[in-house]
Length: 237
Image (cartoon, rainbow, N blue to C red; front, side):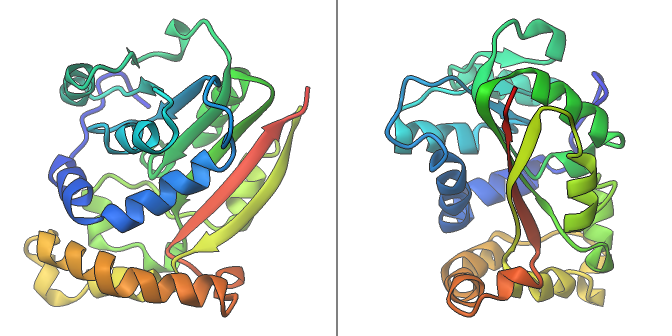
């Protein structure tokens, strides 16, 4: 990620924080489950944005994460929230028990290089947890506006994670119905604005999200399709 990177979707992040509480809590639970019962571990949030997930991580697990962010305006917001913020991997002189990243790698053209760097910052037995957009067939104008280089397939992500000294613990789709909800943003009414209102976020979070969780877990559809991919790797040496 370029040091002069400027994120074009800050309004998107703000809407997500205020209107997608159930969705955000789900993501943090996936990450937090990897360290549950041990609040003395070191954790890094890679691509921390405005601090939504670090705040939730602390609220739920009483662990203050470090943050990595390169957008200067977002760094300022994170620092105001009291976080240690790094903007260059060379600044980090410690190892982490958990590094997580949510909806960030798609903004990085050469994400393989970043994954290699992140693995070097893991302690032995440490986890790297990844949440990214899935399915290149639903790449829309909104993806482009938000600065997404890609949407991933499981095979592509597994290929990028073909890194010495780590093993893939799990890699699965998330949010079956979200696949079709994201396509909804490609309708003509959004082409002129490329924006989603907070009302749509609220509707999705309170009504669609509970149903899609049922589809994912009870019906097992996360094996076949989803708006996102969740993947965990562990450093074994």
